[in-house]
Image 1 (spheres, rainbow, N blue to C red):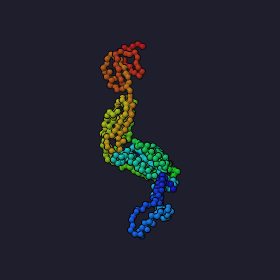
Image 2 (image 1 turned 45 degrees about the vertical axis):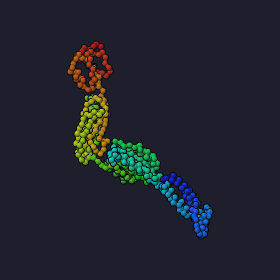
Image 3 (image 1 turned 45 degrees about the horizontal axis):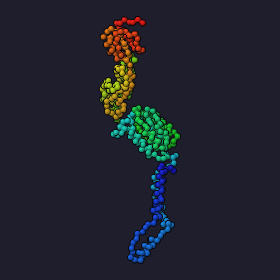
Image 4 (image 1 turned 180 degrees about the vertical axis):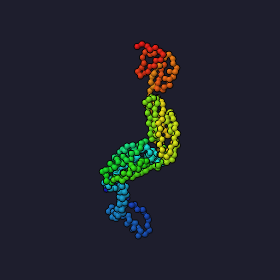
Amino acid sequence: MLFNQPIAWILTALALPVVIFYVMKIRLRKVRVSTVMFWEEAVEERQQRSLWQTLRDFRSLLLQLAFLFLLVAATADPGLSRKHGETTVFVLDISASMQAENDPGVSRFEAACRQLRNMILSFRTQDQAALVTAGPMASVACGLTSYQRMLLDRLNEVTVTDSPCDINTALKVAERLLASQSNGRIVVLSDRSFAESDVESHSAGEFPVQFVQFGQSRDNIGVTEFQVRRSPVVPSSYQVLVEVRSFSDQPTACSLELSLENQLLDVIPLSLSPNESWKRVLDQSSIHGGVLKVQLLTEDGLESDNTAVAWLPERPQIPVTLATSGNWFLEQVLEANDSVRLQTVSEVPLSVKEGEILIIHDLPVPSV
């Protein structure tokens, strides 16, 4: 037998004051009596008693000590040996959908962590537990241990992601952790925003799988694909691939904003049918690079999938020197090209910098 709180046995020291108070001589109150009978009775009670006489009838003392022992034993929380303990692998969902609200001001992930802390704190000394996170990849945050503090510290280090949940791999990892255990179980803390087919085979496996669900299904619309690439033909042009999908059972209307370095480039109104996907390639032009962002202007169940960002590489301008006696039309054509940094001179330079283009118009070429 084990005791989950063995330090409580220190309380057995309370038996000492119990014994002291039991054998302590009680000072009798002085009274005046008017008859010899009462006087003789008072004198007899005041006769000195020995310790043995005090302990002669010790049944009440034993009763008090037994009651104290039961209280201390209950405080020590007795339990069975470790081989009779329970082994649990917690699978915590850290996918993007866990960022949605569970209660006002509390996300599903925060509610799941709070519930998991309470479950860890309720463990007995003979119990073991491990923590597996289910995100884009399954990861063992903490191996099997009976130390609550270690589990709580590892739980505090876990953060939610903006990625989907690979619950199938996470359950396989949990089963491998329990491979050598005869009394193991798996507890999944999730909003169950995954295909039920991913968990069907595990539910009928060797170890029981218990689900603790957070949040309810809500209407949502999100950006599911976002890519950008420069045009191989026109240096200043680039194309943006955007896909938006509705996860709602009702028609949805919203707007899609495209911006580069916080400068608005385009606003596209969208009207999507239930579970419809919208996919377009948008043509844009700019030599400048930076953070390209697309954002859905809507209020739905999950805010994190309303925004996506990509990096647009900068296209440096090509230095061009135009040597001419004066041609307004040619100068305007070159200046209209954003990828050209134009410099106009009236005489042909004898040399140019590396990477610079020299255009000579209506001027004699100097002999080399």
